[in-house]
Amino acid sequence: MNKEDALLIYTLRLGDNALVLAQRLIELVAHGPELEEEMANANFSLDFLGQARMFYSLAGELEGNGRTEDDFAYMRDEREFCSFLLVEQPNGNFADTIARSVLFEEFYLGQLEALEHCTEPQLAQVAARAVKEIRYHRRHNSTWLVRLGDGTEASHAKAQAAIDRLWRYTGEMFAGDEVDDTLRDEFHGPDLARIEAAWQE
Image 1 (cartoon, helix red, strand yellow):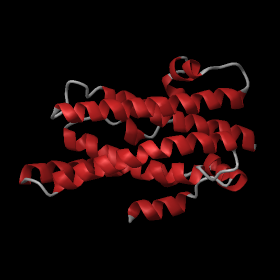
Image 2: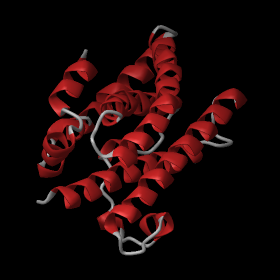
Image 3: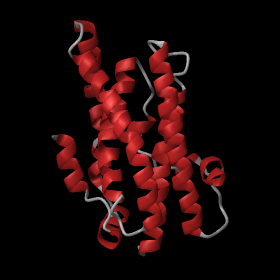
């Protein structure tokens, strides 16, 4: 695989993860445990949607065939999307939503921080904008996960069950393939082994 194709596919993957998680989170409007959390999730959804737009716009430039962010978001068959199974999981209860966010955002933050230093300047610029938002998301959601885990017996049980159920989907984030290898080798992109070590810690 040449490096230009790998860069395009990688950028689309970033956009797909952001778009799907944005759609999942916006489903929670009017269904959150309290108004403040509904507003937080709505804002997080908008953050992810904005990131998806930036990644899709960049993908259109990289591809050079005149496709826009809307083409990538709306005009592809579902099998063409390459989001992680983790972000596709239903919201479930509040603990499920928080656990999914923490498991993904801890990975995503490491990915974005590495991309800030990649040699593709436009991708590095988008990552630098997104990383600030994800740092806040992670802090917010991690605080909630600890709060649920250290709360009542019921909240602890739900949080543990959420982690147990969602854990099976996390391996995909670190499996890697030729696209990931090309990004790392040709563009000084993320090293998945390094990100996984930090994520596991």
